[in-house]
Amino acid sequence: MLDQPPLWLVLIAFLAAIGPLVFIHELGHYWVGRWFGVGAETFSIGFGREVAGWTDKRGTRWKVGWLPLGGYVRFTGDMDPASMGKDLDKLPPDVRARSFHAKPVWQRFLVVLAGPAANFLLAIAIFAAFFAAYGVPRTPPVVGQVAPQSAAARAGIEAGDRIVAMNGRGIAEFRDISDFALLRPNEAVAIDVVRDGRRVRLQARLDSVTEQDRFGQRYRIGRLGISNPRPGFERVGIVQLIPEAVEATLKTTRSMIDGLVQIITGRRSVSDLGGPIKMAQVAGQVASIGLFEFIHLVALFSINLGFINLLPVPMLDGGHLALYTVEAVRRRPLGERTQEWVFRGGLAALLTLLLFTTVNDLGSLGLWERLGRLIG
Image 1 (cartoon, rainbow, N blue to C red):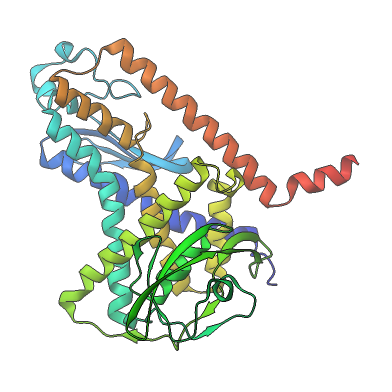
Image 2: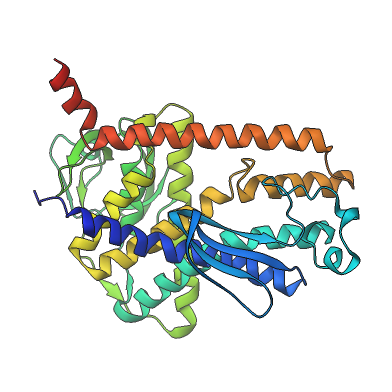
């Protein structure tokens, strides 16, 4: 087991990972807003007191806040945190013309969507660069060996079987098997294999295994109990790089959706949810391993940031998108009081989630266990 990275490395790695992702996210909002003629008053990375900043020739204040847990673009006409755009009629005509809320609903929708989209595009770019440098991982989903007394052995899987589907989901590469299994400890799974030219459906109940990583953290994962043939990397043409990168991004996003659904339905413990402290810890650990692994983690963080922001929760981009969709259908926005309560509820939910994940993070660091020993 490796020693935990020093605190300075954790902090630097966290800022190096989150800072650019927040910047790219907000730059997506900013660029599309500018495209539609929306004025920007403030572009902030981080919250709280300004520690550095400058004002450009267009009057936008670019600044860095002391709390690096997010960022925002304050467009012209954003007169409240919920971005409801009250009192637009009181603005001077030239200011109202550049106001975010004076724009058609489809333009506001695209401005908000651009933030998460920028994070997904960044992840695609990182994956494409990796594939250009090293090739695309290509390991066929063919069983090399079956571990004795494993879930695969109990299900009747044999060496040489080609696994083509799990619970109806197509399997193209060997890593698809592990990606599917690790999120489903103790779950029953229907496995389609091709054996001697015939397609056979087998029933398996995945094993549940608690693993400990090199830093001492423990995780409960599902395991089928098979080994793969020799892994390899395949060089692809330039034209194929982007489609392969898009596919890798979609697979990662689907894994995140699976994990979220399992937590909501109770198949996974809510203790698996992590927050900023956990992200910082993981960033420091991965940075201590190597630059390659750290950049790959940045891609995963970018997908995570884009995905979370698309959730239909008020105060997140997804919440705004949901309200704009309602506005487009109704041909008028929800009432001011309704929107105010919606955003208050969203803010309360986000603060509760932040508190809950912080408690989880501190528990994963062993704080509560150490306090229990002191008290006992």
